[in-house]
Image 1 (cartoon, rainbow, N blue to C red):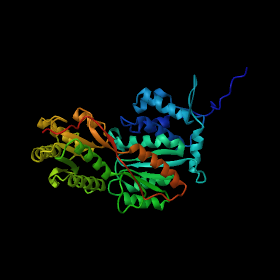
Image 2: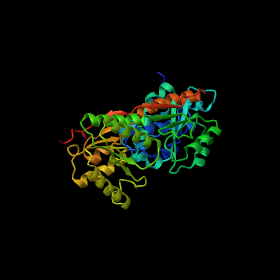
Image 3: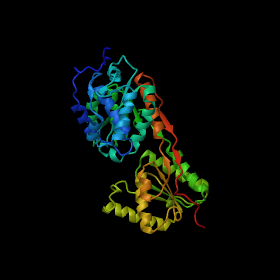
Image 4: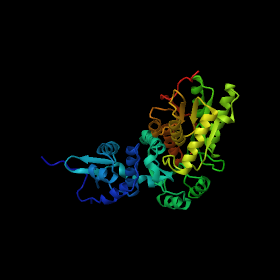
Length: 402
């Protein structure tokens, strides 16, 4: 009986050093590492024009350079095997699969069965603490095969428009998605338009930026939190907000103030406590700036005497947890708490599950995948998609004391 012939020819050189170096330089957060590892490998196989049948690093080699667990690597590579990006042959090793050849076709403007989506991240160095991007990537990944989307992450430490444009002019993705990009998104959008690359923004819209935007309904999120607290019997509800004139700050504040007026308590600005925008990293609690913010927050709690607090963002929850601990308050017996965002650190800061108003990250990712394929086909996209927040009921809200 003749031996079954594999298309994995030994003549195809096994140059695994390059992919291992790419993976070594990729930052992996504690949450969402599987999705980021998969996206990184797909991007490499597409952009490097790797031939099907080329030898691929072993699971232990990938685990060693990424510092990820064997189980995380196995989950990521097994999914890539199911998608045809990799092939595993017992006794021989892992090899690049036939999907890589399909990925190469995305560079051909006549082929639209695969859409290359470049996701721009200016704070790439902080992904180890990021929860937004992994959640968004999870939404994209859930429909990636359906829409034929392949992601690549493009990031750096600074908001350098020129560097981003230069890199994208070489890789020529079909669509670019801009996440947080400081105060220069309009300039970046104009530069990319000059390259005829469609742009979709996620998370924040500016009046001078005409790119389609997928964002959360901040007013609805604040209303959701306020309604939950009022139904629990709270009327002296405080709001912690960062002192910035950003759209999401304004929208959450406006909905909060409107809800207080509807409640007819007569309360208003005295229940809002502003946190300095440059209060430094709240993880470094001994810095003078953070200590000053904690003392100001303690004075506010003693003066305004709220029975419940809505934290306008997760970093503010960290400051509140420190102030509450120093005042000896017990959550939720002395103070009920609701926090925006699904930062997993919030529960650890308070030592309990915190009720939260969570960004619809998976839905935002699915919408981005859909819009990317439509933009790549030349379709006109809506001006915006405004998606509602989700409610997570923790153990941080109870009825106020009589």
